[in-house]
Amino acid sequence: MNFQRIKESDGVELPLLLKNRLVSLVLYLKEKIDTDQFNELTLAQIAKDNRMTLPQLMEFGFTKANLVCHVVVAENEILIQKLMSLDLTTMGSSLNEQVKSYVFQLYQHDLKHLAFRTAIQSYAWMWSVVDEARVTNQAMKLMTPIFNALQAQGFDHIDARCHSIWALYIRGLRTAALDKGSASDCLAAITPALEFITESKK
Image (tube, rainbow, N blue to C red; front, side):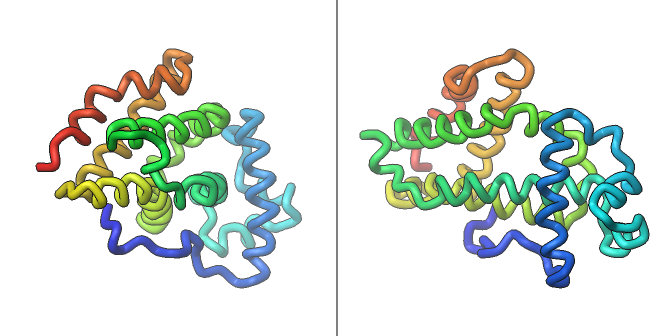
C-alpha cells in the first residue's frame, strides 16, 4: 500500500451509456451472488437478462471475474463512505484500543455480508491488474483512519503496518467463514498480532 497514491475515484473510464447500464448490472449481479445463483450463470445469460447481447458484453471486456469486481467496488464504497472519515481518537484511550475498535466495526459490517464476501473469493484470484488496483485502492481508503492514528502517535513504517493490519483483518474473517465466529471472535483471533504491530513505534 502507498497512502500517498490513494486515488479519489475507484471507477474506470467507461462510456456514459455503459456507466448507466453498469448500475443495473451490479444490482442484478449482487442479487445473483447473494442467492448463490451466480456460479451457474453464463455471460450469455447475464447479457440476455440485462437486455444486452453477448458481443456487447464482451466488447467492453467484461468477464465474470471482472463483473464481480464491479460489484465488490460498489459494496466497498458503502463502507468507505461510512468509516473513512472516522477519528479514531474518539474510539479509545490508547492506540491499541482505537485500532481494535475500528477493526471491530469493519468485522461487524462484513459479517452482515459474509455470504457475499465468501462467494466472491474464487473470482478475486482471476481479477486483472486494473481490477486488483481498484480494490487495493479501496483497502487503503479503509485503512486511512488507522494510518492517521499511527501517524499522530509518531509511528514509523506506517504503510507496512497498515498493510499488515489489513492482511490480519482478512485472516480474521476466516474465523467467521470457517468457524461461524462472531465479530468478537474474529477480532480475538488477530488481537495478539494486532497488539504487536501497535505496541512499538520502531
